[in-house]
Amino acid sequence: MCQKFFKLINKQEGNDILENKKLCLILLGAPGAGKGTQAEIISKKYNIPTISTGNIIREALKNETPLGLEAKSYIDSGALVPDNVIISIVKDRLSEPDCKNGFILDGVPRTIAQAQALDEMGVEINKVVSIEVPDEKIISRLSGRRVCNKCGSSYHITDKPSKKQDICDNCDGSLIIRHDDDPKIISDRLKVYHDQTEPLKDYYESKGLLKIVEGQDILEETTSLVDKVLRSE
Ligand code: AMP
Image (cartoon, rainbow, N blue to C red; front, side):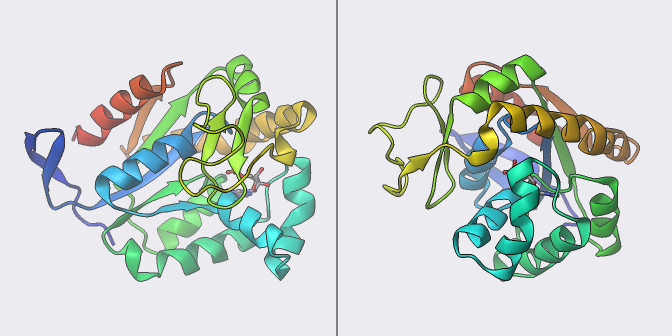
């Protein structure tokens, strides 16, 4: 899977013409660092799916499936869902045909065990981008975040408002406040991120895959920095 990374060979009117276009990307970063938003942009640009374990779990929760019921207590408290559950979700999703030309992993892996499981499955990642945002900014971002309860698109009341109040621009779904965007749970999620997910930076650095992007206040500026590292060898 994903043996060759794309090579930029030309650029015309903003449309990249790519050779060996196959991007298998992991987006790392704290909750609220902007992974979901950047994933949405990259997904459209490179025509590859985003696999967001958070969105898959929230959908399962909404539909009250066995997965949703199992995950509820973890997600509600800001704790991580057990690795075996996550690994099985990702394995199933990666085996779907739309992933054969590449994919973006958003919010997964979140532990070393999950990263090792991807390696054991033979998933060949060719880029890992960590979007870095200081904790104080994360707290302010997450407290103003609104998400679509239908398609999962993410907005912010001041930084990225929807065109119509509380209505998703993409699918007309309703925008809601995520239960885990409560200030107490945000601080627990940040702790979990620093303790369990941040060590993945060293894991992927040692494989020569890690690129760091400083998350900017202006969304397009972060997008342009991410784009730059995606094009770099
Ligand atoms: P997210 O939308 O990515 O911030 O995920 C929301 C919640 O879903 C997390 O706080 C976890 O409870 C759970 N979750 C999502 N992805 C993972 C993962 N890769 N490993 C463990 N738990 C996860």
